[in-house]
Image (cartoon, rainbow, N blue to C red; front, side, top):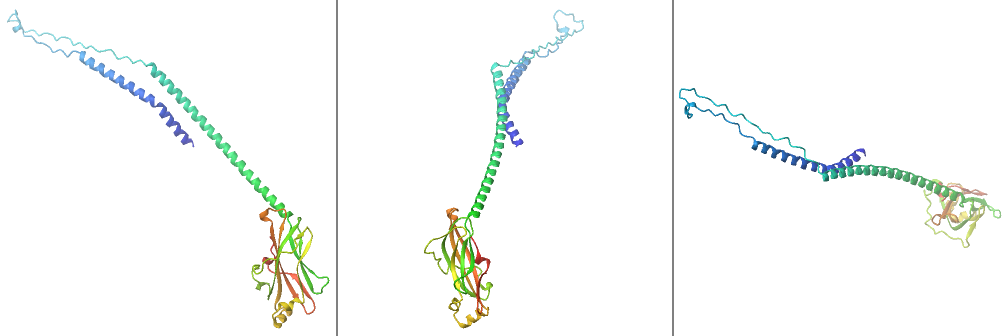
Length: 307
């Protein structure tokens, strides 16, 4: 982040200082041109070195022939140098341009620093908003779980029990009782009978597709603590289930067992519409004795599931 900021500042300073470089170059070129012109003028105005002149006395008019020749002294060399060029004055418009560019650089730098400070504040505010949103989402999820737990604790729960008949000997009634805190409406029931050597010979999952659920003729509404009969079974029905005397004998000797299983479908009145349907599965083992019989809850867990 720091390198990016320094790169941005260097680029802006380079852009803003470009007029200064151009002005300096133009000023340097004009000064160099003036210096070259001065040097040319100086070289032109400087006289060339005087050559010595030797005059023979013999050839001088009116001179004595016996006199010795006389040599004339060379003329002194005179060098005229131009004065050093004075510095060109700084024009007013360049001063104004330089001051304006300096002000722009200062303002640009200040603007960049303010923008960076604003971006940092926005970043912090975004982080705070994200944290607040996450906290709100967590609170909402916790509230939803709490509401679901409350609904589950208040919803009806139908549990299956087996009760012996008080009027008929060796007869039993499978009963559904509402053990929840709100009313339940029974919508359908399904029941099957199977003969197997033991529970392990039953299918791992009950198949209720063999028969369509039968709805009660009159809607059954169970308030908390109320019960309703689901199925009755007595000793006299055993022979009707056996297709031969040999199978009946095997049931009497417990070589094979009779299993009664099914499910109860019901709805509650407090859950959402998509979550109102529930099921309670049940499974019982009929014990056939020589004189007395019994019916107890049994079977795998998949046959006694609750939803």
